[in-house]
Image (cartoon, rainbow, N blue to C red):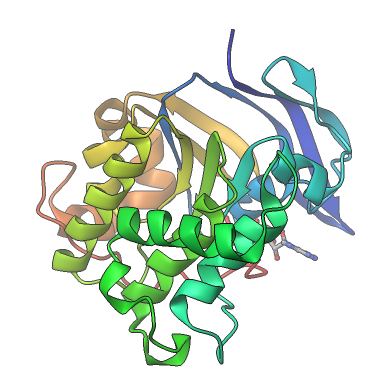
Length: 265
Ligand SMILES: Nc1ncnc2c1ncn2[C@@H]1O[C@H](COP(=O)(O)OP(=O)(O)O)[C@@H](O)[C@H]1O
Ligand SMILES: [Mg+2]
């Protein structure tokens, strides 16, 4: 039984078909990658799964129940956490307080007391490698650290599935390696993951399977190496940039010119 099943999901914005009959499923413990050009519908897909958007058609099942049409806060409490492509921390609060907001408001067993929430924040900050900076005001954090905090905030809700939207965009190769370690570390705690990424090294480095979206439609799904070598994928998406990265065996290289597109949510 799949843990997450997306079946025939479609979503339009006026004349734009952002998603058309998208179907895939994720097994417990997987790290499932979603790739595709800007505007392919990746963020919209996460927004549909996390309940930020209603779907126009199709069904989304989570741990053997339908979550189609449930509001975002209910889906969060059922164990699905997410990050946002555009990170918006509470700037004047500390790193620790920011992480604690997730624990305060999101845990399935009801709200924690502030003291417990702060203690749990320490646990997740440790997991993402931010423990030493827990008392910093968020505005002092570098871009990679803000991404870590975004993951920590989502983890503080104790999700069993974590949806990551381009958390490695804008990171340099060393930072990407560190972020990959973080992803593996979180996954080892038993958290299933669905991650959107443009960086090929990430897809082949951690993903069990990958789905390519193109113009809102599934193009191909399979083992990362096979997907990235597929001629249709190279034509639709990877093209010249992929050739420059040297294929799936290349050292970590940030895909250029990506990461800021779409509606940003
Ligand atoms: N809230 C929205 N309102 C209108 N159009 C949207 C909205 N969100 C996304 N879109 C459109 O849907 C398509 C897919 O966008 P998005 O899911 O952000 O793509 P990706 O994350 O793959 O870059 C784009 O054409 C985008 O402009
Ligand atoms: Mg996006």
